[in-house]
Image 1 (cartoon, helix red, strand yellow):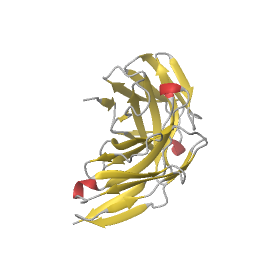
Image 2 (tube, helix red, strand yellow; image 1 turned 120 degrees about the vertical axis):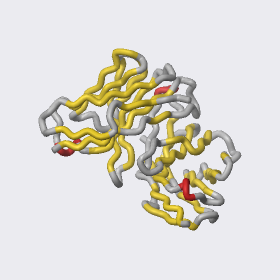
Image 3 (cartoon, one colour; image 1 turned 30 degrees about the vertical axis):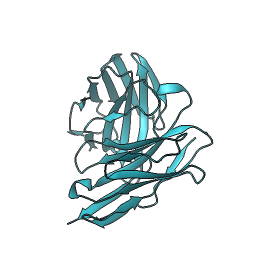
Image 4 (spheres, helix red, strand yellow; image 1 turned 90 degrees about the horizontal axis):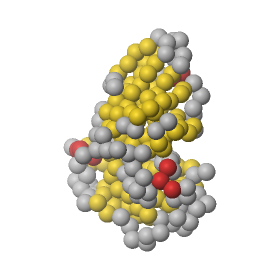
Length: 114
Length: 117
C-alpha cells in the first residue's frame, strides 16, 4: 500500500515563526502536492512538484514556499507564520501513469498559529 | 479553468438506505477525469470511485456508483445500503486530461454525510 506520512498531526506556532511541514511518500511518485483545507472552502492547492527540485504555484501560494530535494520528500515552509495560516494542511502524491491514476493523501497536519 | 459545485453542504441518511450526493462542474474540455474522494472524521482522504469522461458506462465500486451526465456536466455519487462507516466528508474532484499527468484535481467544497443508526 502507498503510504504518505506527514511529520506532525498537530502543531502550534507563534506569529512570525518559521514553520516547516514535512511530507514523505514511499511509492516513488513523481508528483507531490500541498493543500490547505478550510471549512466551506474545500481543498485549495498551495504548491505542487512534478520532479525533484521542480515546483509550480497552485492557487494560493502567497505566504508559502516549498522544497523538494529528494523524490520522496516534499516540504512546505511558512516563512513567517500568520494567524490566517491556521488551517489543516494535507500532502498528497501521485504517479505519472496519467488518466485516472489515484492521488494518495497523508493524514494531515492541523496547524494553529497564535 | 474548471469549477466544481457541491450544492449540499450536509446530508443525513438512515443506515441501510440509499443516498445521492450531487456534483456539477464547468469545463470546456471534451475529455477529462472525475473522482469522488471520502474523508472520514479524523482519518485520511481516500479515493471512492473514478470515471473517464469518454466512457458512457457509469462507474461502480461495490455499494458506490455514479450517475455521469456529460451534457449536463453532472457527476453524482450514489451510496446504496448505507453503513455507519460511510459517515464522512465527500469531495467531488474533476481533473483535466490536457498537459499530461501533472494535472491538478479541482476540489468541490464537500458534502458532509452522516449515516444515522
